[in-house]
Length: 310
Image (cartoon, rainbow, N blue to C red; front, side):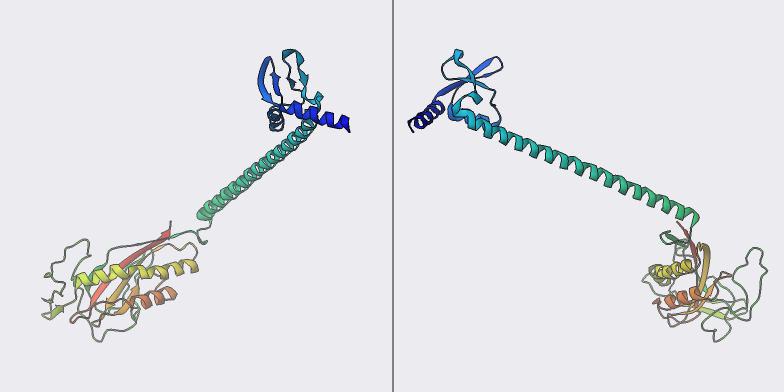
């Protein structure tokens, strides 16, 4: 019991003593024994570090001193565990980087593939979805309503001019109308010569046969309504493009505005589109356009749409 007590007292004395330690050719210190233990656990000293409490001639390794032997073993275990934890963290970080790089490569490959497919579709599959439809519209031209004659509006290359029993219309005119007479040009090409205030011109012109023609419609108001509502027809053209893959054409329209301010007649001047779903859609939309009611000769508006793929 006395020997154990003596050993304990020796260790306590060593821990309380002042120690010098070597690092290469340098002699550093002094440190207390407790400070030496702290440096052991911090990894700054090891069991191979030489220390001395009695001067330069008494250096011994820490692992050889009873007071530090246990702490040397515990510090070594701690350092080994921390090294393994650092290695594991490094491996996981490297794996995440590899996985992230692989994901970027896969996404990049998919993006390039999608781009190639889109290019192929745009060039070789003009009717597929995603190929955006381009719709351009020309400025409207307003004229006095024409006489209801059984003729085509335009001639087509290679197609003889034909006469049909009646022009495609919803409502036939109540009486024959006067020959063609230009009341105005497009809103962008010729200035509006009406009095200011937005009222109809209310002018009367005399035809060659001596009959007078009363023109009371407001050209500027008609142009405004057409400009504000012409985009409502885009849906009709897009639906036609879905029915006809690769659809592209110039589609001239002519419609007459009744005295009640509603579209009364419509002609689609295209040999394949005079009747059918596109005509029905266009007429249905145009009958919603809110033109002003007026008296006198009815107004005819010419409007042309150019349809194609961007």
